[in-house]
Length: 327
Image: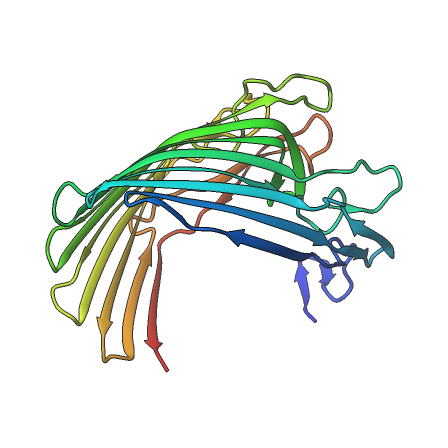
C-alpha cells in the first residue's frame, strides 16, 4: 500500500478508481511436423516438409465475469519445400517456398469470442518465396545475397502500444538481403548486413470504406542495417562494437501522418575470461546516447477527432557489468 500527497489531494493506490486488463486466459498450441531429406544428385538436395498447427483456449474477463473461447482457426496447414544446389565447395544456390501463419493476440475480442455478434477470424496465411546465393570467394570471407517475397491473406497488425489489433487485409512484402562476414585473422572478425524491404497493402479498406490498396504497411522501415567488429587479442579478452540502423516508417494506415522512427545506434561489449567457467562482462547499450523513439498513431485512446501521433522514448545509454558463472 502507498498513500501519497500531491498538493492537497490524497491518492490511495490500494483503492484504484478503475481496473483494466484484469483477464485470465489460456492459449494452447499443438502441432505435428514431418520433413524429408532427398539427395537427388551429388550437388542437389531437396527438403520437403509439412506442419499442421491447432490452437485452443478461453478467456475470463474478471472485472465483468464475461467468458469466451478462442477464435476457431481449425487445422493450419503449412507445406514447405527447400532446394540447395552446390556446384562447388564455395558456391551454393538455394530456393525456399513455404507457408506460415499469424493469429490474433490479446486476451479479449477479437482474439476471443466474447459476444454472439462478434465476427469470426481465420488465421492469416503467409506464402513466402526466397531465392539466394551463398559465396565464399576468399578464405575467411562468406557472403549471401537473397531476394524474397511474402504474400499474406487477411493480415492483422497487433498493436502493443494500445493493446488492439488492426486489420491490414491482403499484403505483399518483398525485399533484398545482403550479408557478409570476414574472418580477417585469428583475432579479428567483421560482419555487415543490409536489408531493403517494401510492404504494401494489396486489398483492404478502412472502417469508413476508404481503400488502402497501394499504401505502405505502417511501422515497416524501408531498410535495416547492421555493422560489427569483434577483436580478441588473446583467449582472455574479447571486444565487440556493433552499429544498428533503420529507416523511418509510416505510423498510420493512410500514410497521412508522416514518417518516423529512423535511428542509428551503437553498442559496445567487453568480456574478460577469468577462468574456463567464469567471465566478467561489460555492456554499454546506445553508446553515443542518441535519442530514439517508437512512434505510433493513437486513434484508440484519444476521443473521436483528437487522434494524434504518440511516442515511447527508447532507452538512453545504459551500462551493465555482470559476472557469469558456468556450473
